[in-house]
Amino acid sequence: MTVDRFEGQLPEILVELALPRTPDYIDDILSQTARTRQRPGWTFPERWLPMDIAANVPAGGRQIPWRSLGILALVAVLLAIAIVAGGSRQDRPLPTPYGPAANGSLVYDRDGDIYVADAGLSKERLLVGGLANDYAVTWSRDGSRIFFARDVAGGVAVMTADSDGEDVRQASATLLNAPEEHDFSPTSRELAVIDTVAGRPVLRILDLSGDGGVRTLDLGTLEPDNVVAWRPGASNEIIFGGHPGGEQTELGLYGIRSDGTHLRQLVLQHDESIDAAPNPTQYSFQGISMSADGSKASYWNWETTVQPGHSCFIHLLDLATGVDRRMQFDPSAHCELMPVFSPDGKTIVAERQTEDGIAHIFVAPVDGGGPGVSVGPTYNYRSRNSFALSPDGTKVIWVPNEGMGRLITLATGAVEDSSVQFPGGFPSWQRLAP
Image: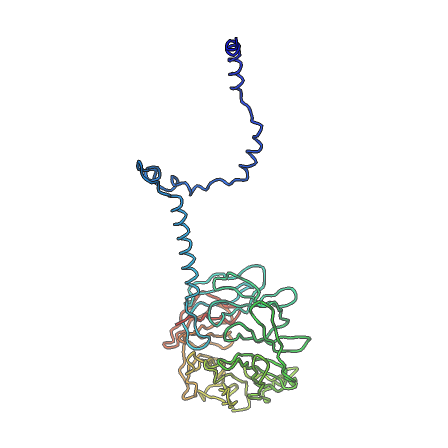
């Protein structure tokens, strides 16, 4: 009877089992699978190996762990890439901060952005752009980073970026108020700058490690002006211009160590005031340049009363003794100005002008033993903004007030026109290891 009753109910039971049903625990299963990531496709050997390799396991043989091997291979490749990339940066030799070096790229500002051009001025690209107003860009002395000024709320920030324009950040938390002349230490870890604090010019040293460290050097009654230059290889001595007692008609050249000690006077000028100015001010020590060994400085002065027919002269200053020599490389020149030491310190590159304003670049021995050699074409001095000497000392970039820069080879005088504009004035040339 029991079997008969079961057989009679069997069709009804089969129908019930065939109906679609949702188990009571379905919510728990879905909750768990939602938290579990799908297995990446690259972990399936069939996706990236031929099927005959992925599926063919010899009878009785050991299955090859393709997944584990694939992961290990990928990790090895990534590690190799990281080592090569890191090593290429860390092992790249860096140049010394002064002296001859290989020619790298040039950085400059235009319309509030930072650009970079190759050493041959054949192409350029935007390095740091955006809405911020960036300017006064320069390479670090080892050529690894750039530094530039940026207008921000409350003042001027000193910014830095790597050579590719990445890692843009503020180099010092201290904002400057009205920065003027400035120069970087041999390591580029500090910045000496003439700034205005409480309405008075001061000489400040900024720590560029990012911690905002700053110190103001005690100059007594000196009012810094016109010149700031870190002396090469001389116990962190900074050469700067200063008005004694704030007297604008006198301007001296002084030295002081970056820790504020050993203040000394090198030379004092007091006969170059421009009488036509509403407030006569001494304009000495213009365009100062340091020799790579730190033994000499060169600059130029307006000196209209020294010799008839001559208005400006180049000076050579011994930084150890303070002996100052007025140079005259070509007695027929009306004006010789803008001297720049060659990287090896043996010659200077400067500009010479006639009385009617026709100018050209010349190269001459530092000791003044001859008029030197004229290089490149002549031009009206009013059309020129500046020029920059290459780190290896073989070329000059001539920068006009308007138009494109020119590349001049000093040995031959050959001129190469470019399509690069430098409206900001003075490009900074990257130093690379020879």
